[in-house]
Image (cartoon, rainbow, N blue to C red; front, side, top):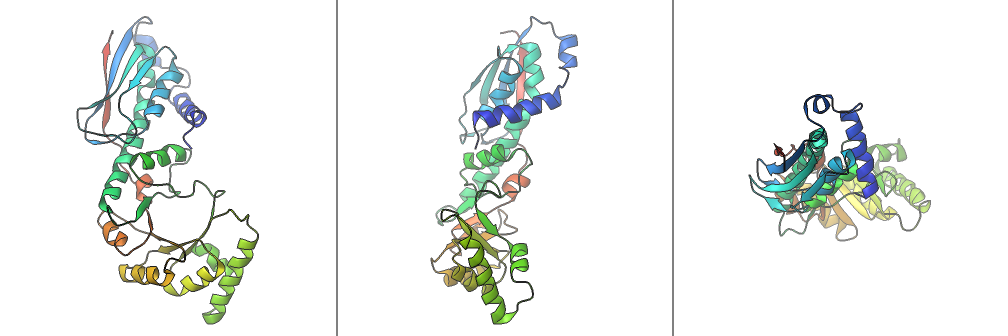
Length: 290
């Protein structure tokens, strides 16, 4: 998803937002011939992500700038580490500084938080995945950062795969109760699946145990157990018994994720990876001249 075209489009828009008519401060106070050397320095330990995005902020501002990113996406680092070196015209370096830092800090923060979740479920067999709770326009960047931290991506968009959630099910089986509800739910899901290409993955969210059998009978490939207590997660895993991928979701935190993983679920989706990750503290230390 993080293609060169996507990087240039999103970073270009950010640069235009930040300096729509140029950098007034740099143009007024810095000599046109001045050059600068800057180091991207970690103020705290973390996991790096966004090297190509950081470099693009400078390249798109002035092709004369040279960026040497020494840290690889997914690489861990300590406070004080130099992650990249930037050299070029001082005006352009300082114009691109904030946009480059914003992306590197945001993406490295997501990668760092993701790595903490991945470490918390080590040796359980569960994989940590993100959600669509991303910053509008930045999904490709944030999803890449999740992978940098050792996590996995859920569907990229509404067009990629089916996920029938609680609101969909409420409409599908409106008014049906008891055994009629189960039959109505299965029939409605089957009818929808019949209209899909055979390659389409179908996931269905359930919020109570009695929905599991009707969903499996319809042919769902993944069953999401949403906001289930730990005992019910274990019961859900036992009921599904390998007939579908089992995903747990809802209110997952670093304090709870290990216990969730130990119930035997295959996937744990965590919205916090992208909607609540703090930006990592990175700085660009600049010295005028070579």
